[in-house]
Amino acid sequence: MGISSVLPLLLLFACSWAPGGANLSQDGYWQEQDLELGTLASLDEAISSTVWSSPDMLASQDSQPWTSDETVVAGGTVVLKCQVKDHEDSSLQWSNPAQQTLYFGEKRGIPQKPIITGYKSSLREKETIILNCQSSGSKPAAQLTWRKGEQELPGEPTQIQEDPNGKTFTVSSSVMFQVTREDDGADILCSVNHESLKGADRSASQRIEVLYTPTAKIRPDPPHPREGQKLLLHCEGRGNPIPQQYLWEKEGSVPPLKITQESALIFPFLNKSDSGTYGCTATSNMGSYKAYYTLNVNDPSPVPSSSSTYHAIIGGIVAFVVFLLLILLIFLGHYLIRHKGTYLTHEAKGSDDAPDADTAIINAEGGQSGGDDKKEYFI
Image (tube, rainbow, N blue to C red):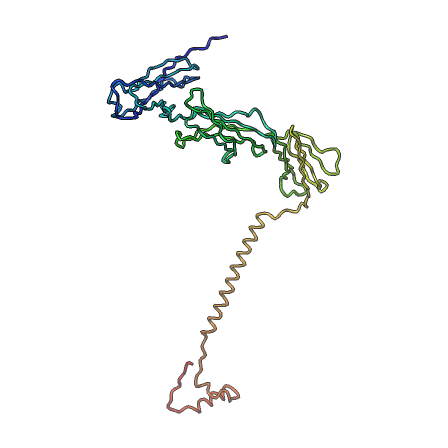
């Protein structure tokens, strides 16, 4: 067996002091606050932060918090000490470089990321699952909530247990529900709610897999088959696991038409005798499902094509234009008739009583005075 490498880590955390009063005693006494960190990774190496202060804190050099650097092997445990003199009921706060408070005296502790347990392997449809969620290091005690996607799950009330350090708390909760096929691939989330997070998300997720019996449906291609065409009947199976075998049958026909891993039944050249009811049985190790399709082979006459539809549209447009032209001609004729005039002259006088045109002219001339000129009138 090989010897694991030892990786020293230099940990630089910030210990801050908040004074409880303005009066500092001359002698005073020291307050000490320890922070224990376990299972450290190399990611924790070279952490830095700054110590905040105020004018009251600077009133005495002895009132500044005091810490020391520590070196620890990766995976080990380290205890960091922070001391301050003349604390006067003040609070000591540990924080990391992300400005997250790890511990705040006797007042606040930030909860760790929750851990979900209880999921071991795939579940069958309608089985019941129980998941547990736990988060430690919070003060006051945090609250846990459950969600499935965007849907809230009713979990058990949060259980609270004091940590071994006597200063923070570990909270836990569980949720139980019956899974369905819609839950396959769903993410179950456990979220921590705590005042120190200030709305930030701190949650864990567990994806679940649900095994369920297959379903199937038959889809023809083309949708309206005709005699002489090539036809494919697709048996579309769905399930977890997906169907691995397809059995094709035709009612009244023995033996089965086809047993294959392919989901399509092919008719290279359709004829009337292919008409009938076909069944497809999709099978997986979770069970089987049978779908039906009734095939009616139509005559080889062509289905109305898009070109025929185009011609019909053009014919309709032409008929509409001809109709408009007829309406225009009718209005034009009516207009010309209304503006046509009638012209009468004095030669036409007496024409009603004359047997012929010559007599009418003579009668008209006799009725005129010798000195008058002929005049025409427009009525």
